[in-house]
Length: 116
Image 1: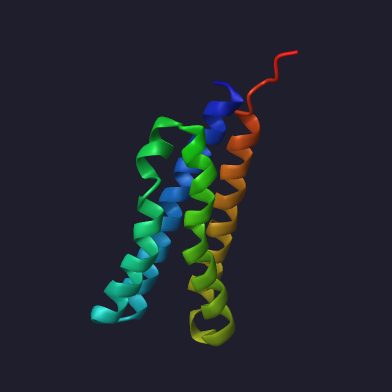
Image 2 (image 1 turned 135 degrees about the horizontal axis):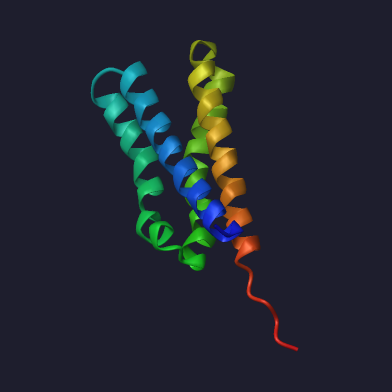
C-alpha cells in the first residue's frame, strides 16, 4: 500500500473520530436542546467535506481544513472557561489538530509534480 492510501485512511479515521467526540461530548454534557444545537453546529461543518474526502478529492482536502475550525474554537474556549470539561475539550482539541495536520499532509503527499 502506498503512502497516499495510508494518509487518506488516516484522514478518514481522524475525521470520524473528531466527529464522534465532538457530537458525543455535546450530547453527554449538555442535556436538552442546547446540547443538540451545539452538536449540530460542530457536526455540520465536519459533514460538509465528507463526500469529497471519501473520494480523495484534493480540493476538498484543502478547504476541509477550514471545517475543523468550529471544533478547534469550541475546544479552546471550553478548555479555558470550563475546567470540568477539560478532558472532553482536550480530546476535541487533539483530534482537531491531528485532522488539520492529516489534511495538510494529504495535500503535501498528493502535490502535483511540476513538468519541466
